[in-house]
Amino acid sequence: MDKRVTVLDIQRMKAEGEKIAMLTAYDYPFARLVDEAGIDMVLVGDSVGSVVAGYDNTLPVTMEEMLYHSRAAARGLHRALLVVDMPFLSYQVDLREARFNAGRLVKEGGAQAVKLEGGVPVAETIRAIVDMDIPVVGHIGLTPQSIHRMGGYRVQGKQDEQARQLLRDARAVQDAGAFAVVVEGVPANLGKEITASLDIPTIGIGAGPDCDGQVLVLHDILGLFDKYAPKFVKRYVDLSVPIRQGVGDYVREVKDGVFPGPEHCFK
Ligand code: KIV
Image (cartoon, rainbow, N blue to C red; front, side):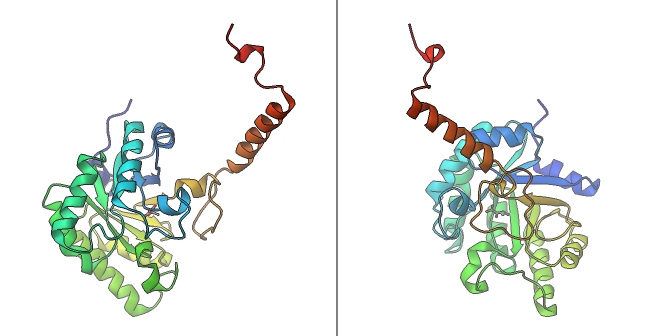
């Protein structure tokens, strides 16, 4: 087993030009598999609300749900750094609540770092959590918890002023003490500019190839979620086919009395 990845390793990877590979996982079996496949960071994302719970967006996800999924994923990891999303309303109300909820994700959920969405407006919150010695990943650009303000999942930073604001957001997140920042849904040239302007690593999702790392939602790359398919997703395998096939075979064998066979019965 390789040694556990730490926030220092993630920062060293940027310094040495080594790309950082991050994926979501929300439970023990998938966390084990992605860990064994060599992923650097696992994110228990609030995307769990969309791809596992079937909500229309991430807003309904609660702290208790994040804690449940975080604990399950943590048990499957031996190498990757575990980052857990702070769900909507767990950090926006006041600093005291934000610090308490970040602490719960570490203490009860096994998180090694937390992620929260926003730039300049959440810088003080990031600082407050970092001051508790909890590493923070920022998240700027297309921030799914802001779906109602954005009017849907839209590419951000296309206009000059929006792009300048995103550069200010990135800088504010870094200055507040975040050790990395997810940059989502921005034009590739802006992803490159943000990356060049920061000392901390950028982890892109729909932000082009020049970010220091990439993150995707596991269920998207495995073909396990097809409600919508953002342009930035690459489906590496379609597991829905063998799953439907295997379950269909089981149903037929039960109906036909073929399963269980003698080898599955106790004497
Ligand atoms: O919730 C999530 O999975 C995320 C990633 C898509 C970055 O925030």
